[in-house]
Each structure stands twice: as structure tokens, then as C-alpha cells.
Image 1 (cartoon, helix red, strand yellow):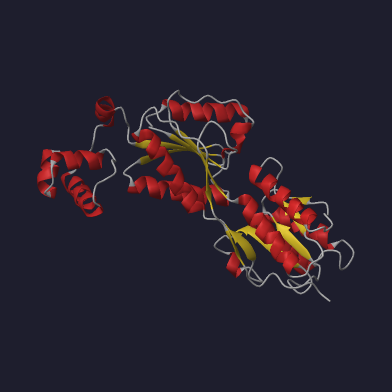
Image 2 (cartoon, helix red, strand yellow):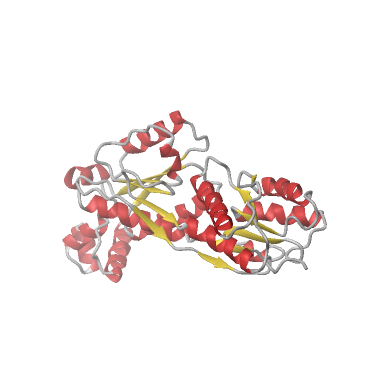
Amino acid sequence: MADVAAAAGVSAQTVSRVVNGHEGVVPETRARVLESLKAIGYQPNTAARALATGRYGAIGVLVFSVSRLGDVRSLSGITQAAGRAGRAIQLLSLEEATAARVDSGIAALSASEVDGLVLVEADLLERFDVAVRPGLPLVTTDAVPGPFPSVDTDQAAGARAAVEHLLELGHRTVHHLAGPPTSRAAQVRARTWEEVLRAAGRPVPPPVVGDWTSASGHRAGHLLAGLPPGEVTAVFSANDQMALGLLRALHERGRRVPQDVSVVGFDDVAESSDYWPPLTTVHQDFETVGEHCVRILLEEIAQPGRHLTGTTVVPVHLEVRASTAPPPV
């Protein structure tokens, strides 16, 4: 470390702060130290560092799927924020969400060389009794308020904006293509959809339930298109992927979007502006969710014994594009 300090023109203490991921190092200085570390080939001994500081310099991340859009984008925000803080990531994905797998996954990460955990899509914690290493900082996403700090996008505000937009265009009511009942986000979006309709004194049609995939949206689209002409003029889809399948089904059944049926999605995936027609949708900032998770976790790690609670809410907004219009006359 003395050689690194001499090469970078800084003190050994500054090198130590960079190596251990401490805040408060000027970005230019941090970059110079990292370049010297690379040039000299210095590799910190994590076991020795853990003995000296009580920290490993790594964050454990548990996701329940690396194929779902929200999980992947949240994970991207987590890894970028962790990298900027000089923290490594230990990732574990549980494609099968059972009590045994969730419990064993959290136990495995808790027992590994990590200073804290981030649980992505952690609504499953509400259904399973899991054990976390005592004193290990933990932050979740998409979880109801509980014993751990959580970060979530404003699901209710997004659903409200989507439904109110369609009502303001003049639609008598709005049908809903809902996400799976096991998802807390889907439950919040469906509940808000119904609340907005009831508050406006509008009929509440039975929701059609999908599973987040475009295939389920395609099936739902054929069900909705099979209703009497003019009954379905507006649909709020709980995510963009299901909206994509819905658009295809409506096209196959000769229902024009937006002239006959308006469609609003949720997520604002990168491709949604290239759907045909370009999709009106609720924009979620998953990357910011991930960044907040790391920020809160590092606050807890830096202050042993401090236990944070509450939910940090990330705002959303409606992106209005060409898939919505007033109802047919």
C-alpha cells in the first residue's frame, strides 16, 4: 500500500480509504489510486481486511428472477451504485420461489463474506418465515413497510395517472389487464384502478389476470376483443409486456389502436416507444430504486447498531404516446 500511495501521490490512509470503499474521497483522487492499484497489481486480502475492519467490502444481492424486466433494471442500478462505492457484489438468483429456497438463499448470503443484503422484489418475505444473520443490514425493494428499510416506485400514483388519463379522454370506463395475484405491485395497481373508477362513479369491469408475459397479454386481448363491440374502449395493462401481447391480439381481431381501443401500459420499457402504435405508459425509474438501496445499505453499514426503517418512494410519471385517444363516436 505504501508503493501505491507513492505512485498515486497520496497518503497511505487515502489508499486505505479507497481500498475499503469509504466515502469522502475526491473522485479524481479515487481514480488515481485505482489506476495505481491496477498498475502495481495490488490485491487486498479480504480476510485480513475483515479482521482489521470488521467489513468485507461486498454486498449480497438476492433476486427472484434475472429474466423479469424490473429485477434486471433494479440490479443494474445496484451494481452501478456499488461499483461507484468500491463495493463488490455477490449475486444469488432464485428462479423457483419456495419457502425452502428463499430461506436457504438468504441463509447462504448471510453466512458469506458480505457486509449487507439487498433483496429485490422482496414481497415474498411477507409470505415466508426467513432468518437473517443478526445485525446484518438488509434493504428490500417492493415490500410493505416492515422491520427493514425498503425502496419502491410510487405504484399507486402510476396506476392513478394511467386510469385518470383514459377517463379524461372521455372513456366511460377502463378495463384492466392485471398482473399475477402473488405480486404486491400488481395488487396495488389493480386496487388503485378500481378505486379511481369507483371514485369517478364509473362501472368496474372484471379484471383479466395475466402473468406479466406478452403471451398472457395476447390471450387476454382475445378475451377482451370477444366482448360486444363498443364495450371495451380503454384498457390499462399492469405492465408493458402484457400490453404488447394485447396490442397484437387487438390487431388480429380487427380492433384499431387507438381509434377503437386505447391502451396504457406500466414500466416504460426501452422498446415501448417502438411498439405499434407507440405505447402510452407509466415510467418507472428502476435504476434509481437500485441506487437508493445501496445508499441506505451503506448508511447502515457505516453506522453499526443503527437500524433504519420506512419506505423510500421513487416518483413515476406518465409518458403519453400514440396508443391513447378519445373513444370512438
